[in-house]
Length: 481
Ligand SMILES: Cc1cc2nc3c(=O)[nH]c(=O)nc-3n(C[C@H](O)[C@H](O)[C@H](O)COP(=O)(O)OP(=O)(O)OC[C@H]3O[C@@H](n4cnc5c(N)ncnc54)[C@H](O)[C@@H]3O)c2cc1C
Ligand SMILES: *[C@@H]1O[C@H](CO)[C@@H](O)[C@H](O)[C@H]1NC(C)=O
Ligand SMILES: *[C@@H]1O[C@H](CO)[C@@H](O)[C@H](O)[C@H]1NC(C)=O
Ligand SMILES: *[C@@H]1O[C@H](CO)[C@@H](O)[C@H](O)[C@H]1NC(C)=O
Ligand SMILES: *[C@@H]1O[C@H](CO)[C@@H](O)[C@H](O)[C@H]1NC(C)=O
Image (cartoon, rainbow, N blue to C red; front, side):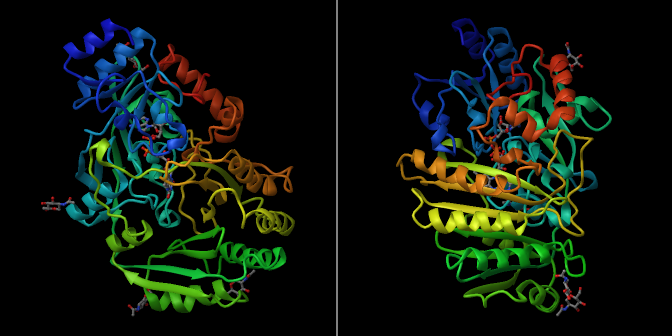
């Protein structure tokens, strides 16, 4: 970033922060402390015009640009994914308005908790989204947005109707399926390479009057791989059983160094859950060591799923203090090739041998994505998102938390081993990866294959050549790298 460009931004009245200014490091801090890159400059636009000036300035000075929304990127791509980027922080873009046809206009810097509370408070409306309410709409909706309500309503991306976006040449456009369709396609799955979304137009849904939040702890996980395999095999059979699975049911299986549980939500009442869902789910499983089944209202359901963290967040970047230090990998298991007993045995054997004494804490979640009646729309070929045919989305996550203690290299080995215990056994099976769990350990080519596949990637590349020929919007895995 040269002095002339800095001056130009100052003249344009854009609030910027440089490395030598007080408060820079707090502003630069990502959620994942493991990838703490140093941007060349952090731009804090308050109006769209500032954002346009900043992008044009970067284009002229050949500085790469990345947008920052809730800054929860696993790889800190919103800090550039490398040193020296221009970070455009959208913390002032906080619009939350439910308008005509119940379409919500959500500013590019809004966090999920504020969005959920705002649209419910205004009009008793809701959107499907993830459980961690400090995540930003910017990354979440652009790369998916999976929650326990997604089997009923789809992922957050499915609710997008239109996007206001600033492009590399400084134009500010409204992209929809009919206006700028190629850009609209690219923004849903690869926004980081195409522009900065200032406003998301999302089709809201009526919030349910009540939700059953349910959870069962299953004992004996470390007893034997055979027992754990039998438990999971039954849960998978349940998850594929059309006579019992309804879109109202959201389900995830959670494992860590000390426990094994199955939990989720049911958009219905306690009686139906207890009579129509629970008996088949629990049939043949060890008696749960504990359980919690509660009928609650919509906002309380979201609060419980967020481990009782508040829904409302300080919008100022520097007053949000939650962090972690982690490495994660994802595996999307396709509905056409569910997990087989040999894979599960390999996986649980690995956990029994290595999980109790793993170098750092870890967890694994397998969320039920597909299964009978799942309403996750198959947006491809209409978007660059390609995970829609997954049955399970698995995530393996090793962490040290917000303690300042460094993440041990041995944890990388352990987390990679969790993935390998599955992929090695099903070596001829195709797996997908979830863009919102972006994995910085992949090479650019691996990332493009895993996240897009060759047809989608070729389409994205041709749009990139037209819309951002100077490769202004870039990070280590960007389209065209
Ligand atoms: C603790 C935790 C819990 C999570 N839980 C879930 C979950 O339940 N379900 C789920 O689906 N995912 C979950 N995620 C993953 C989450 O959805 C992604 O990390 C998401 O991309 C974060 O979005 P963000 O805006 O907070 O991140 P940021 O780091 O701000 O941005 C992520 C990426 O999007 C780009 N970007 C951001 N805003 C814009 C914009 N306005 N225009 C263009 N590009 C933009 C950035 O440049 C960056 O590449 C979780 C993540 C964490 C850390
Ligand atoms: C809820 O709505 C009231 C008025 O309708 C408003 O004063 C309040 O700020 C809103 N709260 C949130 C969190 O949106
Ligand atoms: C599907 O669920 C029904 C109960 O609704 C049960 O009788 C049947 O055995 C289940 N099928 C499988 C394959 O588990
Ligand atoms: C529960 O939901 C079912 C199905 O929608 C309905 O028939 C039943 O009356 C409800 N029961 C109660 C107690 O609300
Ligand atoms: C900027 O790029 C968009 C998308 O390619 C294009 O439609 C528009 O005409 C361009 N604007 C200018 C001023 O070149």
